[in-house]
Amino acid sequence: DASLISDSVETFDPDENFWIPLPSMNHPRYGLGLVSMNGYMYAIGGYVGTQIGCSVERYDPRERTWMEIDIMPNPRFSMAVVEYEGLIYISGGLSELYTESDAVESYNPVTKEWCPLARLKYPRAYHGLVAHDGYLYAVGGFNEYKGSLSSVEKYSIKDNIWTSISPMQISRAG
Image (cartoon, rainbow, N blue to C red; front, side, top):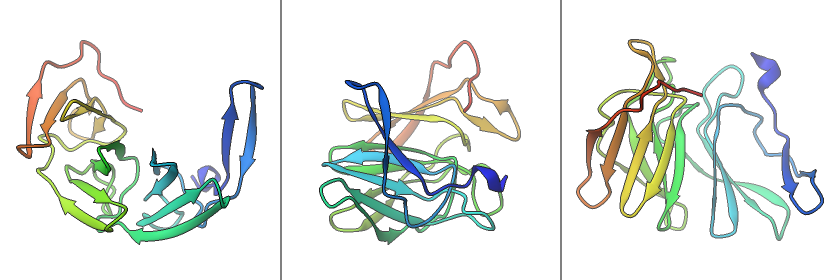
């Protein structure tokens, strides 16, 4: 749906209880990954209208500018992203074929290095990704074979291994 594609960005001021417009991203998109790290905000991938986007943009709040800093090697949208110890982790999402992906990679915005990691056990999009104490957790989501997912996978950053852990009682995606 083209009406969902936007370049607008806002920030919420909880003290004043209102939204403040920020400068627009360089590439309008939806289904992007968004993560904050080291005082910057990163917008990754997303659907850009006629194709799946692969740009990585960084917002500098001091300069109030967006800058395209890199290209994601595996374009996708509706993936999950999280920051942990100086790296941005990207998992799953919808690929060029509009099918759920099991790809996982880390990105170092300082060195601009992309590192492919062990694949998810189940392809998924519209899922959550959480980092805690040396592990990533891919939670719920959706894939065309199983529909909404209750499965949870735990990734050891040290060992580069995903394992299935106890599923949620209720499937969730979105």
